[in-house]
Length: 412
Image (cartoon, rainbow, N blue to C red; front, side, top):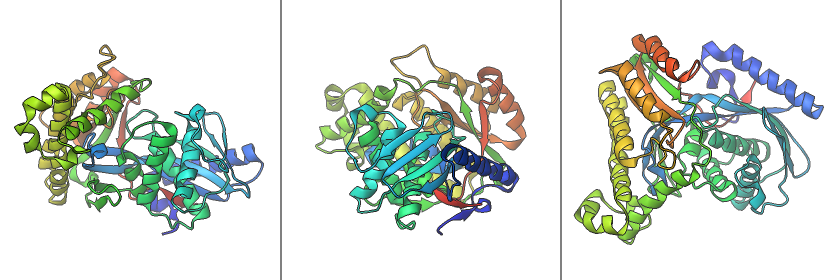
C-alpha cells in the first residue's frame, strides 16, 4: 500500500484528535515555510516485549509498534537541501550533496538526517531535498525509541517522495541503524528501527543480519483483559552511552573467547563448559550478560507461541522471567556509574506491589534510566495507575495500544 488513511493507523477513539494534530502540523508548516505541505508521514514508537539486549548479538526479539508516533508535514524541493523543524527543537538545514560523516554533528538530529540520505544513496536509492515540520508524542528517553522513530520517519519520507515506496520496511530500518551507528555515533542494535518501520506485533530473528526473519504475531491484547502500560520514571539518559555500549562489548568478548564475533554463533553449553576460563579472560559481568542473552533469546519464540495459543498466563510468566533476568544478570536496571539514581528499581517494586500475583512487569528498552513495562489486568488499571503516579507524578503511566502499521505515508 502506498499510503494509509488515518483509520488504518489509529484506533477509532482517537481519529478526531489525530486529524486535528495533522492539520495543526500543516498550519505550522505553512507559517514556517510560506506554503502548504503536499504530503504527510508518520513513524511509530516501539515497545520491546522480549529479547532484552539480544539484537546486537544477532539474537531474537519480540516487539510491537505502539500508538505514539512522530508525524511530519512535508513538501519536496528541487534542490539537495533537507530542512526539518521539529516542534520544540532548533531547525536543521542539511545539504545532502555532501554525505560525509561530520564529527561536529555527532549526537544530533542533523547527523541522522544526513545519515539517512547517505544510506539511501549508498544502497542505490534516490535521495533529494524536502522541507518538513515534525511533531512527536513519543517520549524522548522513554524506551519507546523516539530516535528510531525519527530515523524511520526521515527514511519513510525519502522512500515516498523519491522512490515510490519501493524500499522495503526492513531496508529502511537497516538504513536507520546505519545512520545511528555511523553518523550519530551510537552503537545501537536494529530492533528499535525494525519495530518502528515494520509495525504490529513482530518477532525478529537477526541470525542472518542481512536477511532478518520477521514474523507477525496475531493477538489482540485488549481482548485478553490486559492493558499495556509504560511507566516513565523521569530518568535521564544523558551520559549513559558508555553503559549501553558496554553490554554488546561484554557479550561479544565472551563470543570472541571462542573465536566467534557474536553470542549467536556459540551455545550456552559451550559457555558453561568453559565458564572458569571465560570468567578469567572476560569478567563475571560479561559471563552473566552472556547467560542472560541465551535465556532471553530462547524466551522469544516461547512468548510468541504463548500468545498464538492464547495462553496469556504463560506469556505473563515469561515476561516476569525476562524482567528478573534483566535485573539479576543483564544488570541494566541502574547505571553502575550513578548508583544513587535507581528509578527503574523503585518502579519495578511499586508495580509488583500493585499487581500482587497478577500481571507482569519488566524493564523496558535499553534500561539504566527511563521506563518499565507492565501488563495490567483491566480491573486493576486505575489502582495501578494511581500507585505509579503517586510516586512518579501525574501522567507517568501511559496506557498504549499496538499499532497495526509501521512507517507510513498518511492520507487525510
